[in-house]
Amino acid sequence: MTLKGYFDYNATTPLSDAVKAEMRHAMEVFANPSAAYPAAGPARALLAQARQNVADLIDAAPEQIFFTSCGTEGNNWALQASCAGAPGEAAIVTTAIEHDATLAAARALGQSQGRPVHVALPQSDGIVRADAVARASAGPVAVYSVMLANNETGAIQPVAEIAEIARDRAVPLHVDAVQAVGKMPVSVRALGCDCLSLSGHKFHGPKGVGAMYVRDPGTFAPMMIGGGQERGLRPGTENLIGIAGLSAAAAEARALMDPNAARNRENRKRILDGLRRQGVAFSINGPADDARILPNTLNLSFDGLRAEALAMRLAHLQGIAVSLGSACSTNKDRRHSHVLVAMGLPEARLVSALRISFGRYTSQADIDALVRALADGVAHLRQLSGAA
Ligand code: PLP
Image 1 (cartoon, rainbow, N blue to C red):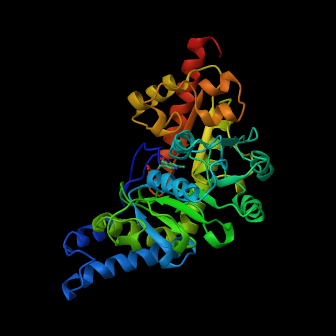
Image 2 (image 1 turned 180 degrees about the vertical axis):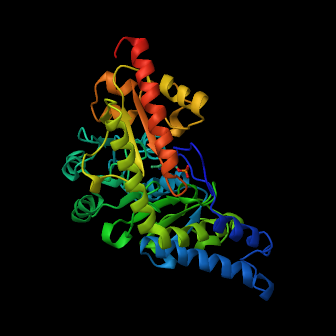
Image 3 (image 1 turned 30 degrees about the horizontal axis):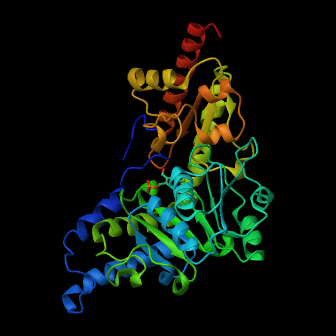
């Protein structure tokens, strides 16, 4: 498959051929997996295989995997479940760079339960230090919720260090791994988290299906109340076709992890080298160290122009899709990315920031076309604004 001009993989990814095939197969598997008769066997087998494939991708046991509708649901559930048994004065501690599926959910929950919400700030490279999370609340804490990789900058967060703090204080840790899973190796055991959310459409699975890892399902509060599906924790007849797609996506992501990451790293370098060769001045918003950033993500600022104008030019003249930041926030009346603002970037970098994210179907020819389009667009817009 080729996907010309698409540089918004962090917003969503296309279904792979293997995922489509598995979903087509699942369309014929119609029985309710909760039914006891033999005809429901294929549906039950499909669910069991999917649970195993997702578990294998994140180094968990299948009994610790619960299917959800998306990453947003997982994040909301994690916060609600963690707060369910916590004293009223115990705070939700999260970070200023989280997705709205965590930040807005934390604020709403804090408000409805009269619970404090504390937000740890990142350094200027987009990494939230573990001690910033530790210092965010001196009082009792109900839950720590920290993302593994940021959707806008790709910055990988020191989750294992934060887990140590959480463990010392006997506070549960939720990890939003929606952007990380499928793009970098993820081990729930190495991270030491209590629950972790992921979403199928970020790694070539379908939209509208995700999963939650729960370390101790016996003590976790249900997402909603209903029947006994997902052992009563996430009731509702399972989305078998979606789960089949997630299952195939998980198996593929695991099998292709190393070559995909290597290819992404190469493409990332090709963009940076290409821009430098063309003499385009830019700054990288995010960690300088390659080991601290998702291999498929680049957040760049081009001082002296507005990112909207550049993105429009790329879209309309060259058919190239890039993002201004989080796709989920583009409809809202928000001036700048809350992530870049929290990193303390100056105005000129905030207004000129573009997120470029790529992946499995990005060719070198595509990268070269992007570099040419960026060099042309940046030169043109800087000339117009007198910044050239
Ligand atoms: N968390 C992060 C870091 C994300 O990037 C996203 C989506 O962009 C979500 C959560 C929400 O996931 P979903 O679209 O599956 O609800």
